[in-house]
Length: 229
Image (tube, rainbow, N blue to C red; front, side, top):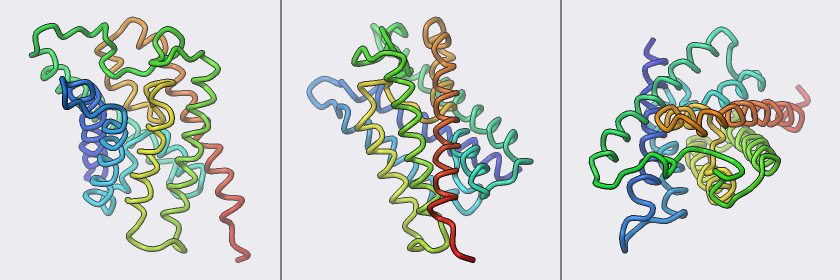
């Protein structure tokens, strides 16, 4: 139970910190943090939580990561559903708290997107469904490669949170214009639930693509990371 609670709070921090930076700070008059700031915010949430709860739950914070670690032989199937449930709860709670804060400003409008992921007309850069699909699959695949490699027993010890956090930062730097960056179904659901309408209609992509990418990343790492023993 402590693992599940840790995953709930960890995912809450990721969604609140990352999406909160996008909703509250990205375009703040004169001192907005912009896309670079939002990218760093997502990376920092993972880095800080990895040190805070990594020794408790493994700090997945992401259903796709849990599935990828299972596919990579690092995580038992019996814990998949409880972990995913905890992550989803954390994401939804974060979206709710963020909504309460953001809606306190005059002129707040959910139609602006509330940091939701989307494609086509709802892609920040107007990218197509195919572009969004490829982006989410490839970037989640690379994310799992980094996670599995950085946490390998042969990797430098104690450095995994830094590598993983910087990887997530890079992922956002690449893909915010395409999909607003998901690579995490719990992050996508956590804000889409409050936007409703198009955000929920397009949510399927941000569950399917990260899951596919995570499994691909795990399969590739099991091949390239296998030892002679």
